[in-house]
Image (cartoon, rainbow, N blue to C red):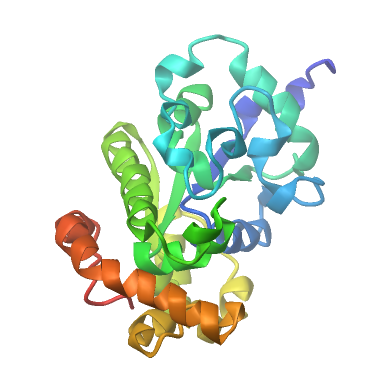
Length: 281
């Protein structure tokens, strides 16, 4: 372990931890922050998507807990102050992450989707930290990650309800934990898609940072709406065009037959986050 450079001690910085479900816009946020004056985000780490979870050995990366479509179901994914009680945790995380930041910057960004359920742990380790959490409608998020399901049947929509429930488990955990946080900013993926300029202004005001707008202005709004369009056209059996017409037909049929049951079971829980099955936009 290298000797500590007092000039670049973590106490001289403020941290911004970005979290949210996979395919919800966490990378967009981290990239935009990384282009902002006096802010440094990870780059050229060699790790998948430059995520801090893969650069450290303090806590388990998500692939140990079932991967993209399952991690929130594992109790080990939820970390709180109790898990940060040993005094060496800040030092170990700093040693792992600091080589990939420009330490001349005041604000240091770490993006990992699973930060969604680790906010209290991270705040205990680094009290001078902010939390930027992005949400995306659970239906479109589920459609976006379904291809990463470990079983072929799940890739075609079998147990689509499990993906919706996974979203709810993760966000309900964050919702409970958020009452313990001192500085948290929330943004909806759909609001960025609807008006990138307004999203930049709201985030800048909420975080107290003049967020660089470039990444938001370059955002492909049409691509961002792709899964919402697919969902609205699901009765035409086009949910999965990348699979070809036959499998797309089968997958669309599987998902559509589950919809009434899923809506009945989860609509009220979705409503508490400002979402509804009746409007995926």
